[in-house]
Image 1: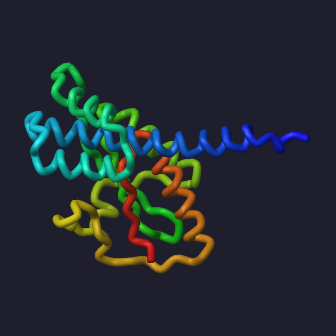
Image 2: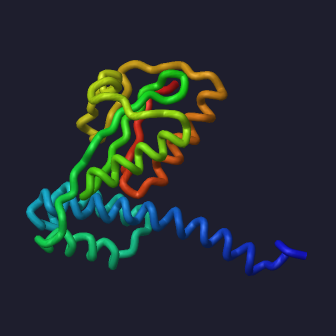
Image 3: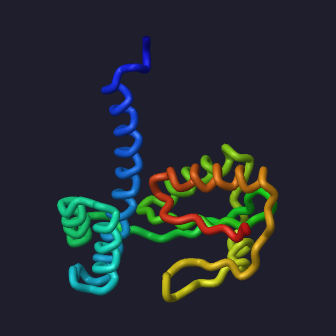
Length: 178
């Protein structure tokens, strides 16, 4: 009678949650590293404090936060860059994929692979950005125009966004779907 072992059930659930936490913590570690470098390794800078507070709200261990700040202070580490990729998803909705990476080629390949699994390819620069404006208060992109999608397109879009968010390099995905 397989599947009836209590420990097996707990182990599978714990594995899933640990995997999600690991992805989230690595994204926060990258953000903390970038903000600490921008602030000139000043832990008390507003940008660093804001990202650290977000990480603590997500229950990121203090040891991991300190390690990310120390990595920023170490000059031998590579410089992290924010890259925005653009694409058009199911139903013609625009996608902006923001990645934070120290290796542009790796990030591009991860994004291309995730998109190609769903029959989507990258668009040229500026082809989807027109549908968004930068909100300075939240430091995110807000759609200026929205596209209504059918139920099947919404389901496919949800799968695409989930696939992209599972990529290690991808920080955020913005879409203009209703």
